[in-house]
Structure formats: structure tokens, C-alpha cells
Length: 259
Image (tube, rainbow, N blue to C red; front, side):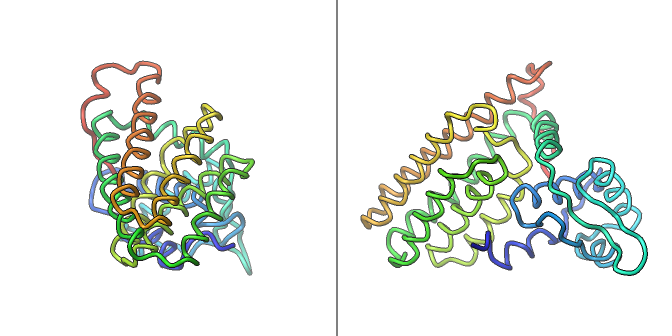
């Protein structure tokens, strides 16, 4: 089953916002795309020139980012005919990047990200309850089943990302779907809660099933409320993880730049 649509993959290579430390932003974008399965293990990246143009960065910045990705072990560069830069999906490295990104953000950043995701997902759930077809609802249930059965952090994270994007697709809204894809490229940079506490997977699965039940019951208010509640819980988990980090103090409450 394909993870996400071609539009989701195009979001991987969308231009980065202007800002400092852009090579780090490239590393985070690529790492997040690997974690979400938008870039598969062994997949060849576009050429340096093409990739720099797509991301709206200089070739120097792009080469710095590729060098860091090679150092991390997430990209392998081969020379000669048939050469290029190829993706290597390593869960240990992706987990390390997620922890580092969490340490960069303040609790206010995490709250704001959760607020935006809650607004988008809750609206998608409300509209899906009025618009989703039986086939689309069955697809949502299948995704939740796959999430429950996934035996790796990567598999769980990918199913989670697909659930929200497909929920937005059930709302029959291209804009909401694109917003969810953009959000998950950012959310994919953060730790996956069940990696720290496996029992949370059951809570997440139950939350998604409640949303799908409300969508199937054609209960827009219920679908919206359940989606909001679930993301509020997820946001609190992220904040709790942030506060557990060594050296966490009042500085964690200061907003920082989110790339």
C-alpha cells in the first residue's frame, strides 16, 4: 500500500522558508521525509543542482547539508556511472535527530504546533463526517489497523502520518490535505511518543478509532471533538518529553525559530 500521494512527495522538495542555518533545515527536511516514508530506503535523490533549486538554497548550502547527511549515515553518495546520492533509512539516526530537534524547541513552540495541527485535523474530521465515502472510511480503518500491527517505530510513524493525511483527503479538501502534509514534515522531526513509552500506542490507536467511528456515524461535532482531544493529548506528551530533557529549565518556554 502506497504511503502517501505524489503531492505529499512534492511537499518534501518544496522551497524552504528564508532563514539562518539553512543547511540544518535541509537536514531536518530530508530526515523527516525519511522518517515518514516519503523518501524510501535506497531511493536516489535529485541531482545537487536540481535539489538546490527545488529547496531554494545555494549549491554550497545543499552540499553542506548532504555532507552532514552522509556523516549521519542517512545518505550514501556513489561516484561514477549510475552514481548519485541515495537514501539510507536508519532508525537510530532518525531518533537522534528527533531528540536534537526537540531540544531546540521551547514548550511554547510545541504548543503552537499542536494548536495548528489540532485546528487542521479537527476541521478535516468534521468535514469528513459529512463527506467521506464508505470506501474512504474503510481505508481509514485499514490504516488504523496497520498502525496497531506495526512492529517498528518507523512503521508506526508512517501509518500515523498517513492517517491524518487520508483524514484530510476524506474531507474532500485539497488545501487541508496539503496543510496536513506540510505539518507532518514538521511533526516528523520530533520524537514518536511510543518509542519512549510503548503503551501509548494503544492510546493513539483508540483515539484514531474513535475519530473514524464518529466519521462513520456522520457525527461532525463528535469527530471534531475527538480529533481535538487526541492532538491535545499528543501535544502534552511532546511537552512532557521536552521537559524531561537534561538541562530543561525556563528557557524551554521561550519560542524559537521553527523551520
